[in-house]
Length: 115
Image (cartoon, rainbow, N blue to C red):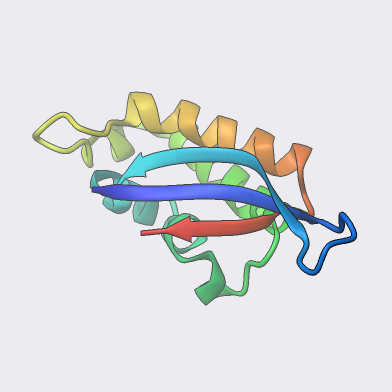
């Protein structure tokens, strides 16, 4: 089980409802929640609405700080690698980099975090 994250934009095409465009889509395993919590970014990834995050641009600073903490002390975070091997520091860091890049590319995008 995991979390599906999507960055979305609504486009007014003249119809009754706006057209929703998917700008970014990514999956992350729930096995990485302890690692994300250790980095101070659990809520930002898994529960952005609960910490007042509404757009991708608002994630850039906290996710970047969390990523930097992870890069500065890998051993601290590798201890949270799950025993079953599904989810790891080595995979989470590049995942975060891609997510941050998408947030920078689409700062006004809406976030959909589906647990």
